[in-house]
Length: 150
Image (tube, rainbow, N blue to C red; front, side, top):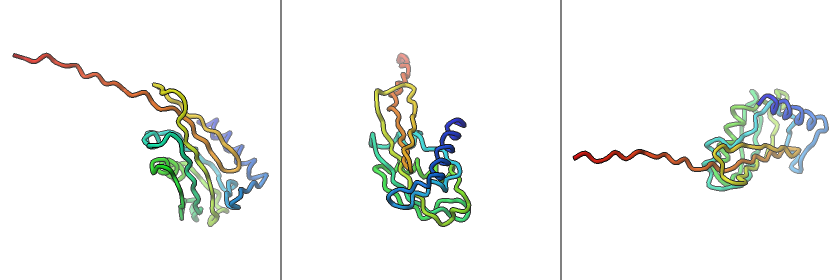
């Protein structure tokens, strides 16, 4: 995971050097100091959709917290996954307090079901993350039947 954080930090640094700003004028990705990207945990895997995008806009509070969140999501569990990661695993630069940040997180289930699904994450500048995984094969739990006693 530390390699991924390093790559993400480099990408975010380059984004801030280029001062890339999306059409909304408020993506402010240069305000991200460090962030783990949401993945398909059991929460997101419980979503009733195979694909969908969480569009989230929030204001950075004085202590780098998320405030005034406005979001759209095709399933509340995908939003819960994104918001949980942003609250728990993202740090924002202190000079960005009061600024609004806009991010997109697209979740996709693709391919055959697997015993060991893996997650791929792709960053599409300036503010779009695509998280792809596979559905898990159902677990068959065989309970032995005891013979009836006479």
